[in-house]
Each structure stands twice: as C-alpha cells, then as structure tokens.
Image (cartoon, rainbow, N blue to C red):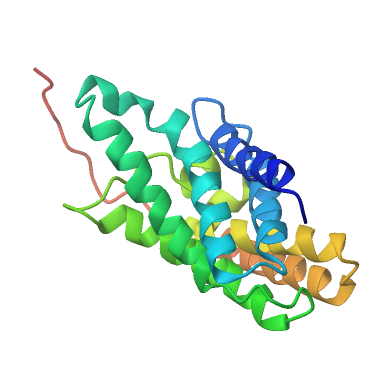
Length: 207
C-alpha cells in the first residue's frame, strides 16, 4: 500500500468502519472490515508507519464514538482521543509488518488489537470501557462468546475474523479458513455452554 493520501484515507476508513459498528449505529459486520483494513495497513510497513497508520485509524474510530465526553469535559475529550489512539498505535507498532507473508502477523494482529482494548478499558483511572469492539457485537452472533470468554474473548474473535478477511485478500486460504473455523468452533462452544438459572428475585427502588 503506497502513497500517503491513499494510506491516510484507508486508515480513516478503517476507523470509521469500527466506529459505525459501535452503538448507536450498530452495524456490527463493519467491525470485521475495519480490522481487516488495519491488517492491510500494517502489512509490509515499518515500525513508524505502523504506529502512524494505527494512530490515525484509532482517531477516526474514537473521535465520533467518544464525542459524549464533550458534555463532561471539553478539554478532556480531545486528550482522551489522542491518548487512546496512541495505545492502538503502539499495538500496531508491535505487530510484525515487514513481510506480508509472515505467519507471525496473523497471530500478532488479534493479540495486539485485544491488548490495546484491554489497556483502554483499564488505564488511566480505571479506563473508559466505552465505544468498545465488544459492544459492537452485543446483538450479533459473536456476542455469545462473552458467556465463556467475557468481553475480551469477543474482541479477540472479531480481530480473528478480520484477519481471516485480510488473509483471503492475500489468497492465503489456509489461514483464512483456519481463522474462520476456529471462530465458529468457539462460537459453538459458547452456544452450548451452561446458561445458568434464576436463583431468586430482588426489589429495588429508583429515586
């Protein structure tokens, strides 16, 4: 992927797709496309380029989905967007990107994406667990994975599907098929896992 304007446009598009997957928009399949485009941006890029592309993608993701912060702190909103985007930038920089054919990248992308989300959920001051990838799947099939692997597992599954799409773009059918098969298997386990049962009722007053 070459030419700076084109790269910037793709990075912004990837972030916009992730943003559109999050409520109130809720177009959950777009999360997979966003991660797939992120992987395409990382492939064959140096460390600085991976950071910059990932950061720009995250800005396009967080700027609209965290806009609610303006009502709380107009100054804190842009700071939060920049800082959280830097977390995603560091995740992108950690992914091997020099060789498009490197199998390590296929494993690193879901791990780095998930780690960036976990970090954003916990730092600073307990994190801001809003506008998350897991939320985008609340009404989607992959949301069931939260029953066995919590929200972190949902994020990882979304990233794996995104990697599968990117692998299919490169015609790496074994990688794409394996990633999709693993995700479907995990979803199947979640669907048959015990659902629990009601043990009692409580009364609560809302004032």
